[in-house]
Image (cartoon, rainbow, N blue to C red):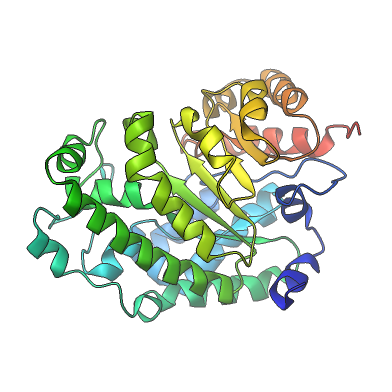
Length: 351
């Protein structure tokens, strides 16, 4: 056993790590994507003090504060460090801006091999030291209560932003480059992968107990394109960080579940468009994470409890980490989110 692994297992609540590794658990662990964020009034107050989203991300004390809020307020079984997937492009030399109400925007994008040549994959740890500081501080403040999740964007998702310059329904510019200049596309994806490996290794050294890769725009690709332009880079990153459990969440790419069954990850995250029974069939021995439709949380407590229990029945009580099928929506009531979490924590474990 590695020192890192033993340290992670000496937590007061290690349900998440045990479930990720496929070990027996007393109940299903639960956390929520975007839990350290917009749904909580406490987050909005901290965000207002920061003055801007990017300042909040870059200030370790404030990032720590909002990371801890859902643990203290909602009672989730894990914290996830507050940051943004776009810190990697920025560290590579492609800064982003956050347009309030519109999302991220890149003033410059990658169009040519000369643009790519201006990027750098060196000194990533130094450029993103504020994330390491936030992790270290959060780990101290958690004091062993629950695991701390680190994360990064999957290379294809970051590639989309770096080519397109902003969010998009289709990412046509990014997909056009894949067709017209696949050599440049692969070179950029490879560079992103190198930077991401360095970044995640830094997160693990700073206290992250589990790592999640977010392939948020996976669903714009078909199966063949995904296997060429996303999966190999995800697998390269996963193979480089064996020290902690690894989760892959590829939104919209249900067809890749069988591929992830053979990937060096422990957990496959699921959105709400896949039936748990099918995911179990395709995922082999992997742990599954998800996958309640976030819109369920707009309902009353009775309907939230009913849908949550149905989800738990379909997944079973082992090799499952309860979560939503994507991030919690900002206008959902914190009380409704707490109802979802409490329903999972109260669900009987039927071995």
